[in-house]
Length: 138
Image 1 (cartoon, one colour):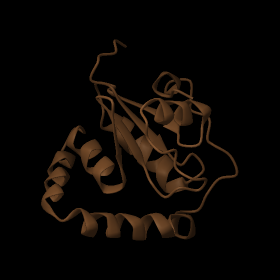
Image 2 (cartoon, helix red, strand yellow; image 1 turned 45 degrees about the vertical axis):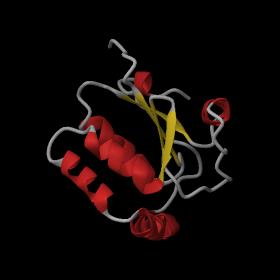
Image 3 (tube, one colour; image 1 turned 180 degrees about the horizontal axis):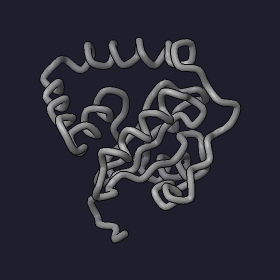
């Protein structure tokens, strides 16, 4: 699959069941294969964030991170930017960007704080299937 300069990297909590489901959701709605993925706590992600001058999230961080065009987006900004590039009706969610960031992030943070209780967690990062391996960077 050819890669272009418009690829985006999603950094996610590799042990969170909700986060893993979100990655599969993105993959299913990204027929062009523009999104690539890595666990947030991987050496790759930590190095990438450091190279961009971004703070490396603490262990157990409650944020998804999107790297797009050399910029780092977190929490609701990342989620809405990801939605804008998916197939189907999902880009409509990006219109929520008009809501105040504090409100969007408060909703995001509420779900993030409760994600393990509601959806569970794994003991280790899930290993991608051979079909999906090329989409993962770490």
